Image (tube, rainbow, N blue to C red):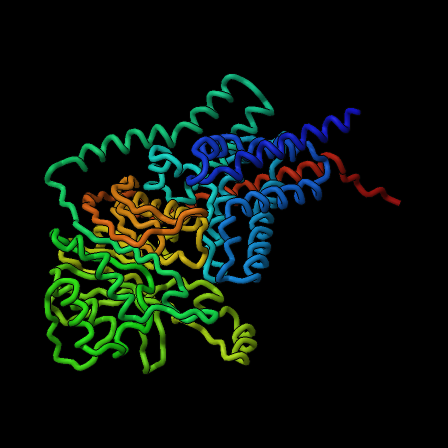
Length: 553
């Protein structure tokens, strides 16, 4: 009877912990995020440590954390364009995440929770999360520290230690709660409350200081038009027999969205990743066609010396007409050697020079094919790599400021965005197309990861997305303006956001040391923990298995 009661108790801990941690997403539950960051994982460990078998404890840990990750990544189930292979990918991914958590959980001993154990285990988890960035194209989503980003107060500490530093802190907070549960005292409870509350206390001080400076009337504001085209893939390309809109009609659609806003003074117009098909320079349009559309919508004639033009010429005509810089996401081709880039293009009014940034983080199978054996198999079916990865960060010289550029998934990589700040960026601009997982949580999930970059680097952020979330974010992570984005029941509306975003920016410690200090420190703490654990086991063996001297014959 007692055994059955213990099993039920363990199950209760697992279920409550699962409900807390699986709901710990900023777009879902503020309470879930706060509670999970304080004690959600603690409840699981309390139940898991009741299991005497290390093998079963590991299996429970893998299954539990993998299931929580599957709930967090439920937007993968929107498989309209991805097909059935996405479920295999998701299963492998969640299993891998579960194995990481299971291995670290195996190292937790209920009777050995000294500070070197707590700090070392937390460091081990931070290193595990960081290591995911370097597997294939990397996996940067869903770090444990994301739960602190549900509130502006909780996320401010990311400016010091980055997102993996937040993960270290959440793991440590839960371990301290475990120690308080196992060896309860008022002192241990006070320590847990202090550690759990420190990010919020720091956030209050940080916000108060910088908000006061941001409100200074001398702070410059950039005036931006952010285009949300809300075009589905079958409206751009022929997919499964669909009849897409012609490129001219797609441009007419974009310009008609912009038309009501062009009476205002504008510094920059930003359009999303892959705004229109057929690349940057391909001479698809007659110059007279471009001129006719501008005359129909704006009453102006566009004069061009060329007989034919490409998408770059549309952007140039828009820049010349409005006097604003135009940033647009387009494919771009190089013929010698042959390369194709997923790129962001900057054209400036009345100037012929063109700036290009090439996307560096490409998605496996969607934008490139990993492994030579995969390429050999797929080449038999006429399938080859889609894009060539870019090699470096690039800062666009806008009339209002210098802007660091990222495309889609890249903005979830703090160390990559840090390179923009080091090259002189005064703001970040992200071009995104989240339409491949329609009517899902992806736009919000992507946004909450990207918002952390504002605080890590102390820079404002503009985001132009095809189906959301199009917005302006100040350097403290606060959303200044935003458009509605699609969800399970409502499609994304095609519209344009006029954002007046303060260009206030400030230096951060994360900009100074990046992941070197938080991850280097975490690795040292974990190494020290392993050394201590080694000597603990060696001492145990010597104590329990004494060596007797050899007897003489």
